[in-house]
Image (cartoon, rainbow, N blue to C red; front, side, top):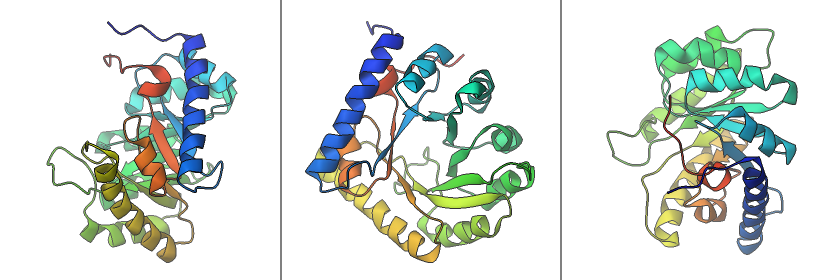
Length: 236
């Protein structure tokens, strides 16, 4: 049986994850502090997010648009940065454009266009990471490599979006070498994208089970949920 996390547990785990990120940076010749922690707080209560924020954690990721929007309003006074992660349904673009600072999961021109049109012109542009599909699994979201250039150009031209980089959720792989191989491919596409678009500075890859491989291959942001907040709870 999984023990439920509490604010004290989360505070300890935030410190532990940061120490692990620093260790990976050192072991793989990365500049100290070059990898940002995105704490994935989906299905977790505001009390645990407050505990993480008390430890200086600013960036939080949500997979359910409505749930994350509610938390962003409830915790507004903390000045947190909210990332929407994953597949985007067309009927959720207005909600996402209104309540999030980043979107990691744009994989279609249609979605990018809707986010641009529905972003408040008085707000800061919405930061976008394109989700690139590197595996052939039908269940996985993401644009294909052949679609990447056109989608990137569309986002770069948008008035209320800023193209920040790439993200991916590759299929699980066993062992550091296999994990590094797929992240190395994503890193190559990131380097190309950053040459073509000066605003690109974010390579979001790696989760609790493959963080070291991602950092070794150039991740600038790792998305960590379980190691910070404990096992995912059932979405209500």
